[in-house]
Length: 332
Image (tube, rainbow, N blue to C red):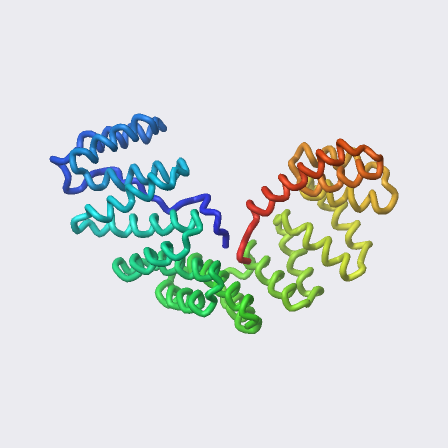
């Protein structure tokens, strides 16, 4: 489970239910502009619609600001939509949910919790309950997170994919509580135990228990199934198990498959052994934006005594690793 909100659960209302006399013409025109990716004119027309009393225009305008990362403006218009809403359940549900998302994005967890609770109670929205569990998780309120996820699971037993996602989250909660057996049983109860995220989850669970042999088995399975990011975990665990022959084998195999994460790791392995070909390999990896290739070149420049290039590479390492961690941060 990620918490980067790359895909926000935002529904842009396409019509103005019940507001025909109140800025409906401007509302519809704004939506036309939005569909044509003309955000500037869409914003102007939503503002005109709001002036004439159209409540849904507040919500739509807030979503535009949210996507533009203008969070203060987004907050204002979401709150206006809630305040001015007059019995529109769809508007209430969407506004409460996305307002809580805004607060999650801006790390205002107390406010996120408040509006998720409101959403869960007033609309019986299971999505809000799931997000509430996630908010509790990041606050390290694991007992409350467990309660929210278990409650959500009881409501979505017939929805296999969604149920599996919640089970992944619940297993992560149990893992942090060191309830390892409960975590394992939760993962084993999933409908699809061979999905990318479930295999990862098994690997991390066993790694947490210091069962390196079983952990590397699952990470290797994930890697063989195309989960390229697991290469570093496989290499690290083979190293801790003193199985250098397997490190070389898996690195060569992934390099031949053009796994972008293999260039730097393979380069570092070569550098540690004989050094021949490492520089060319890592420079190719840098072109592919492999964070480990920057680490490899940093070692090469250090050995060559090229201080300026070494310093520049250190800065690039920090930047690339930040991007890597941001893009791959998970509860799993």
